[in-house]
Image 1: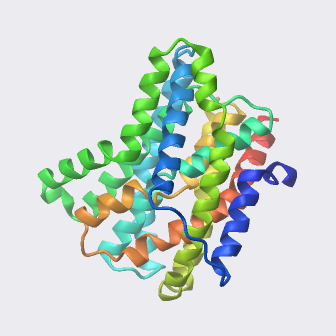
Image 2: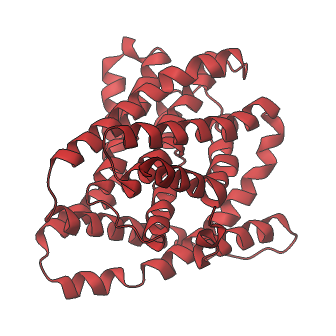
Length: 312
């Protein structure tokens, strides 16, 4: 494995920030900086995807987006029994955790997209649409598992909240801008600081991750193991499924990464309202404090190497 690919500024900044967060040293982050930086990244990701979509063909895109939706919708159904029987969670918390692991982390996707570009592959133009399509199906599936099908109105309200949430709106706005802007100079100017901002954002994320480590003590070893093993299995499955239907190395890597990632932005907001009985310490800490750093530091590299190996 080429570990040199992950020895780049964003990943180094993330690791250093986690270490700083776990030490006694405390850094005061200006209020609003996290929202500002994440907002730029979402718009930039959407903008890049929108520009690329204007020159793309449709057949591979339909396959990729269709697979993404199916994986998102099915994942909570597969994980719920495991969370109930092996992790020993009650029904509400099991459904909440399943929702988070069926939905996706747009930050993990951003790291993976940057990774495949660094490895010399072009990010497919439909990749952003693939990511956007995976946020909602898992949340709806998990809510139905938790008994939400008895209240169609609440299911619809949850779906609307996810679609109209800050992350979704900024991402869609970026895609729309990319589809209508023809000035490549203006687009390049906006996107040029992307890697610098991503480095800053992962530095901020590292401190956020470190702040969640304390909650892991109350979750038990099985949920922590779940937060590592299940994403790895899902990521490998995503790569193999993507490759089997003809997706290229970059697309298969990204599909595997999305399948392996877990939401800590869209899903928590929806779950807190749709399944209020569930505990945030149980459904938020494992995705943020375990799965996110695992994927960023190790997982993306594994999914990429597998995609390369399968492609021959």
